[in-house]
Amino acid sequence: MPAALGLALANPQWVIEARDCCYGQNYEAAAEKMSRLLRDDRDPTGLFWQACMVQLLLYDSGDPTLIDSFYRLTDRTVEMCRQKLRADPENKWALLYLGMAELNRANCQSWQQRKLPAFRTMLRVPGTLERAKKLDPGLVDAEFGLGVIEYFKAAADRYFFGLGLIGSRERAYARVRRAQQGSGVLQPMAEFLLGFMMKEDRLYEGAAECCQRLLARYPGNRSARRLLRDIRLDQGRYRQALEIATGLEADIVRVFPDNRYGLAENRLKMAQAWEKLGRKDSAVFRADQIIAWERYQNNTPWLACYVRDAKRLKARLGN
Image (tube, rainbow, N blue to C red; front, side, top):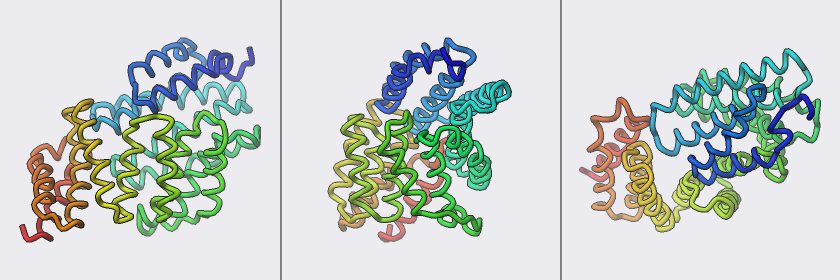
């Protein structure tokens, strides 16, 4: 067996199965699949995907108690990758997982509204992924990570005004598309990011196609449905946005009934759609549902923002 990775390299299908359970939002099955990879305590693959699973579950459930677990797993992944690299500086897989673990850390920092630390973390990564790509020019997963960095450098002022980073959207799209069209293990991440990028850049139909491909592969995936809802809302296709949001609400209540983060975010989108359709009573009803949770805003991610926006919506409507 090659020294680069152990069980993961010998059994690549195990990684694919664990990944697909994560994106299928079958977290118990994902944990079971990962347990096989975690048996190899010399290999960062299992830890990396365990951290990915916790991060996906965090964003899906809105449970802030998962944040510390995600960071601990990420720290362990990073340390194991560094150990591998001390023994073999040309281990492309250790370089890849080191870079992607740090990018996932930056993503979580951004989700916590810690924008400057997120950018600082992100900007530590390019050299690591460039080294992996130099060792294997066909490593499309490294190409994906570099595309993430390139895009957020190009769009930095949208997220953190005045940062002054220089990036190329054209280069970012080229890199992410190569990963999205490739067969790397991070391909679903590339598909989702491409959809997000296109939505942010108002390329709505292309963005919707990314969501539809993800949903064909992972039916019911709530992240893809949320993105598609937002695309339809931005397009002015308010009835379609509401249809997606209604399905999401039922799904969130079924799977995570205490998820005020997810429900408030979805209800705000519904309120905005009803406002655009001139249905004042329906918009106010959804806004009031969010405002009723104001007392939870200090321990629920993003809830303070949603309460603020719900109050502003009501003020616009004269309530």
